[in-house]
Amino acid sequence: MPPQDATAIAGRLQQAALRVTGPRLAVLSALDGLTGHPDVETIGAAARPRLRGLSTQGLYDILRAFTAAGLVRRIEIAGGPARYETRVGDNHHHLVCRACGDTRDVDCVVGSAACLQPSDAAGFAVDEAEVTFWGVCPACASPDQKAIA
Image 1 (tube, helix red, strand yellow):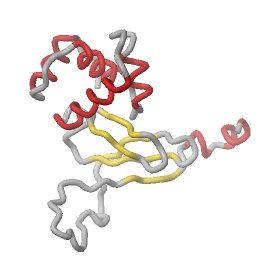
Image 2 (tube, one colour):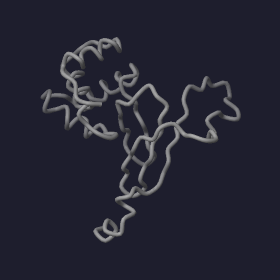
Image 3 (cartoon, rainbow, N blue to C red):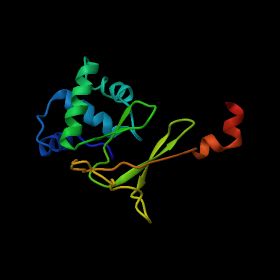
Image 4 (cartoon, rainbow, N blue to C red):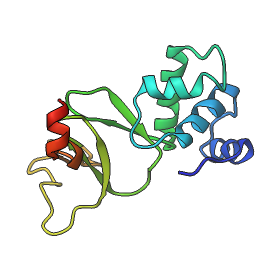
C-alpha cells in the first residue's frame, strides 16, 4: 500500500473503530512504508523513529488490535516468526522460499479447490482456510546465488 499522510491513516483507524493515538499512527504508517510481510522486529525498527519510546509490548498490543479490527492480517509461516501484512479482505495465499524465507502473495488458487472444506468440521464454525505454497525462489535457485552460499 502506498504511504499515506497522517490524516488518511487516522481515518483508517477511525473506520476500524480504533482510537487514534500516536503509537497507532506510527505503527500503521510504518506498516504502509514496508514491503512484503514484515515481522514484529522489522515493524518496530520502522515505527520507533516516528515515535520514540514505543515498547515491544506496546507494539504487540497495537498489532493485536489492528488484526482484530481487520486493518492487518497476521500470517504464521511454519518455522518462522509471525508476520503482518496490510493486504486484507481478499482471498489470497502465500509462496514461501524454503532457503531464504522470502514470502510473496499469490492470488486465490485456481482449478480444483485444495481441501478447503474439512471432511468433518467437528462442530467448528470454519471461517478461513490458509494455503501456503513452499518452494525455492528464483534467487536461491540460481547458480550464482548457490556459489555465494
